[in-house]
Length: 186
Image 1 (tube, one colour):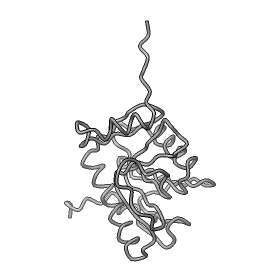
Image 2: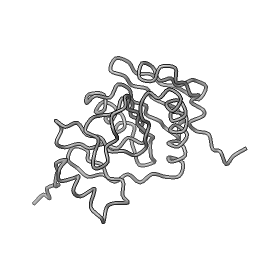
Image 3: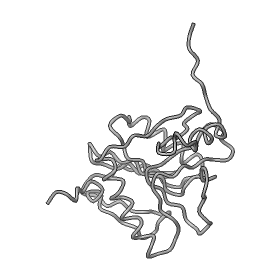
Image 4: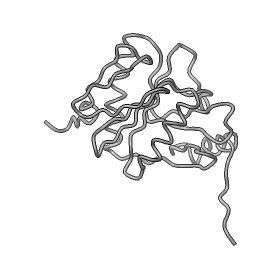
């Protein structure tokens, strides 16, 4: 007899993820399956570097909101509630105070953890774009490159290149090498 995997709806998942025993865990729902994110220090360093550059830019322009590890869902999708490592949403709607943000961010950034595959990350990029995101950055700290996805283009940037915000964040630029900068090293 084969064991059947239990699949959850967003409503069921939200109750589990927001419960007291899971309050300190990073849980996301992918195609009905609950997945826990367990970032490493290197992962967190890259996430922080990206967040810092984006926050500084958005703070000056007052164009929207940059956040880390926030859960988003498409209200029509009952089997997914995703947590990009960094995200940007334009506009000035009040911040969601409980549960998932009921839309996808304009920009979703995913930094590869050691247990992630590029195939899985690329599936995430396609999901974000199909559900309302305008741009996705996939970052690989081991190989030190960034894949940039929009609805009509894909691009790979290496350490010597400059990452820009395109139509999502006009004027934003960041050296790809800055993503991998270790501020503890000279």
